[in-house]
Length: 337
Ligand code: NAD
Image (cartoon, rainbow, N blue to C red; front, side):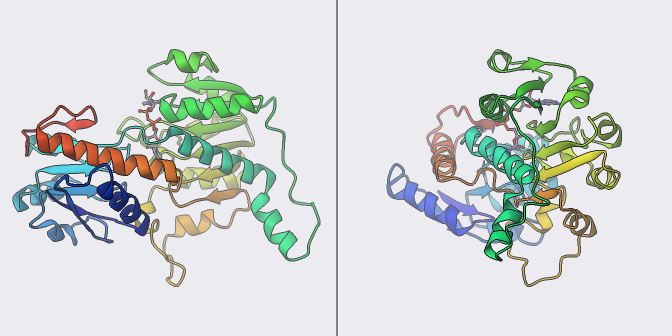
């Protein structure tokens, strides 16, 4: 089976090749690594392939899927957990097999969430530069103890629970909001209504999926409802927050600090070296002017353990499809290859 992998980075090649040499040797799978993202301009590269392997910023809208199906592509392998970037109704209509990697390493994202919180709070990024330049002044590096603070987690699925465990270890009081409550979270913190969580939390962290109902979940009103000066963290999907409203809340000091690993318009920026190019995104550039904002380029998942799991589970999903075995990770089962 010939697979076209879009948005392939050197690390994708490393971990998929490793899996193809070991557990999936002789599996009959051949991967062509394409460094471009899947878009209207690049979709033709999938001609002649049986399957497409896509990542978070590959565009799998209705017309792209139509074209892929016309080219003979029968399976879409998402090497990520979120599936907001694929039109599932179109995939079903076209009879495509679609599978994802639902839980490659919740700890990877949870630990990155804490890395962002700790960096932003204790200013270690600034301290690192200061010390290298021989400046040992502490002014401007003042943080707060996490111990005793209230943390509000929106979404208490796999990553939310892994995050709750870590915050609990720091001695935080953990609040959660989720329309589907989980007993596992119940053992770590208290479920409250969303407005209550926003009003009480010193740190609000988002761990719910992006959907029509969660688009701009954190909007002007909800920012207004947050405790003044609280920190907002988003390691889920950029469009969960209204970035323009967040900038206004930072300007008025209603929002105390912002840490994001995801950004609404990230597909134009992330996973590329833009250091020699001009960045035209005015909203992103405005965010960069705040000392109390930290942005990472969608690296929450980026650990050895997670990448190994992503490669293994993606190839497992493809194997299920090839041999006609039921696949637990299928979002859209279809007739076998
Ligand atoms: P999950 O499915 O285990 O949990 C998501 C939880 O969100 C569920 O409990 C669900 O009930 C809840 N939810 C749904 N709608 C909600 C709403 N309106 N308000 C509050 N909660 C709601 O998913 P997960 O594995 O924990 O992943 C969470 C998100 O993290 C993914 O959807 C993905 O967008 C993001 N993610 C980011 C990275 C990264 O590298 N930064 C990596 C993996 C996943």
